[in-house]
Image (cartoon, rainbow, N blue to C red; front, top):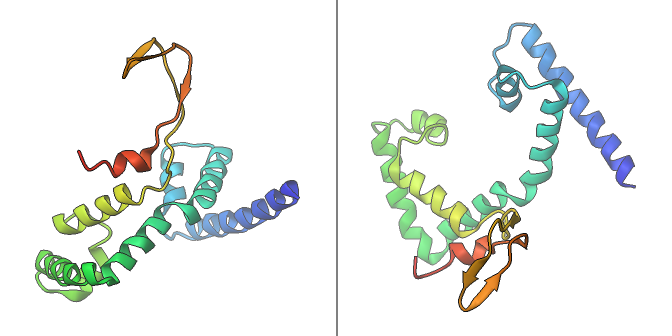
Amino acid sequence: MVVAAEKVRQQHLDVLYASLKKRIAEGEEVNCVITGLVKDKLSEEEQHGTCKALLQAAPDSTASSVYVGIAWLCSPAGKSYQSQLYEAILKAYDADRDKAWEMAFREEKVPLMVSFYKETLRFWTTTPFATPRTTVNDIKYRGTTIPKGITMIMNAQEANHDKSW
């Protein structure tokens, strides 16, 4: 079943990639992840691998955190923040709503917006457990020795909610 799903996913990627190559061949300047990977001289296999990783990660990662952040903005606590954020965005773009709509998420020009999205991604972390690490020395921690060579996984979500920080 997993192999069949992989074949279907690869077929979809092949269609998307062929479409992109056609658009580029026709002279269109396409600004996307893949064109960045091409400029970085990644092989086609590496480009496909990166796309697969992004497709697999996306549903349970940044998008999920952004949805929660937007939901918070709609809550009683977040509603007052909406107007502050909106005013800061408009101020940064000289009250030009069209320009703000086009650019506010493409550049980090609005400090309040930047702090909002960074705080959203920190607080609702996309991966509750960080990448495993292996100790390279014995570590003394709270009266216990963690021996060299032990694999440890930090609870990133708990660390991101530590009130002492």
